[in-house]
Image 1 (cartoon, rainbow over the protein chains, first blue to last red):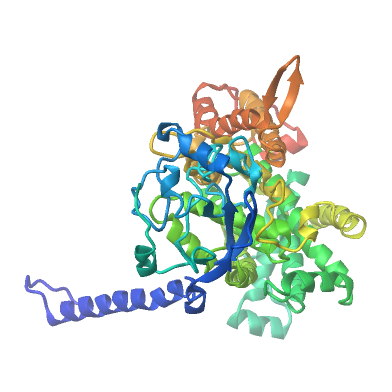
Image 2: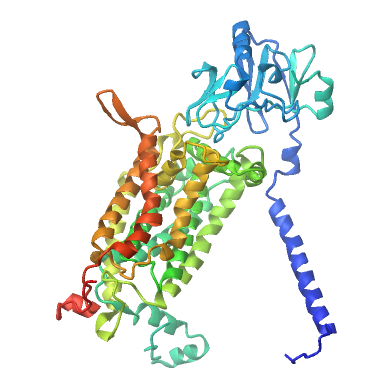
Length: 200
Length: 431
């Protein structure tokens, strides 16, 4: 290369920087499609919502529904279970947030913020520790769910009480239809807003 | 390569090719005439064994890919079909599944060999680091390969391990869905794991070439840790080490064949004979045996550490257990390579090996089970894993750095030749 002694940038300097810059930006823009292709595809995202008839559930019965590739627990709770879940002091909880997709993120974890109708508890059935499916039907030491993988105990409101899991089982966005006979999982934010969800 | 080429093309065609692409010369200089320390023992044969197993895995894997279907509805059945209906499928699938285990047996012995004889020290740091990268890629390939048969342990192992990423603050959830291509481990995940599982062995093969290159610049380390000084210290690679490696490879393959033919499922898990079911978690999720020590380290962190949750702490400890290997050449500053001449480090190394085996034992057990019970007092496995994890890290971060300064090494032989032929007494005196 020739030895430039001038202080002024030359036309060649400009071309170097412009070419280098274009190559760098072009390279970055080319990489993005190759990264983004691994994110959930449009048809996966469009799974949207499912409806489930829950009118045939008897008190104390629990069903598991497949939603977005994972389980959702729907439990019709007894009066005693509701009372027990409501009697828990907030201060004794491991995770004091409601983790409810229908409410603001800072909603506290009292049982009233975990349900739309206290009789039906609807939560995503994936342990917040490492993604196992907890065992239900009032198992564990707190009358709710127990995760056999690493020993997490959840209570009647599916809140984490003991074990390695850091968070309560999350509540998916849902509403009731047909006077409470049908639950719609994956409800839109407009539907949720009209369904009467509110922070207690 | 570091030594003078002794290749002399004799025939016309050899001369013609040598002037255009000296590939025969490269092979001759690397694997025939290459000067190799004359005192290498059988611990040094695992490099050759590993090369053989890489070839076995690639060949058997290419065949399996001809019959396997990477779709959640067909994957499990297609593997069963390979084992029952495809001609010799039982043999080739057995070789591939057991080959992974034997690959890891060999790599662990190869790594312990390097740790004992100080093969990671100058001038072989780059050689060591490439080796650790190969080991990481092997773990990734093995993990994704285990998911492909789509059994219960495949599915739940994938779920638990990919969920580890969720421990990362802020970005964890997004990266998890990016890895899955879905809201849970599903068909998109299986497809990409198949694609990457096919890719990784070829990356490993490329790194193996770099590994051998980085080996042939300084030459082999040896059990004395004393560098090659003269012609009397070495022997040509062929026939001396082609035959020695060949014998070790045959013995290792005999044991391998014993498993393939008589115990094809002994190293697997019975739950993987059940097709994956996203609604039923097996009672006890365990990884393949070669991941158990790291699984134990992951679960040993049961306490929050400042702003780091127990879950994130476990993930950091698990990756740190491999990460520490990258900086090992700069942690152990002792100028004496071989632990033959390091009276304290030798015992610390032995305890380290036992700790690794112990962590493997802990990884296979339920953390709340008791190691022993004695008059109402017992120790759960999680406590044992915590003790052994502490030793694992202390070995690298405390023991080796400190020993470099406080240990008094024994006298080393003057040269490799002297150590083999016993001609002269130690010329490098004890310090």
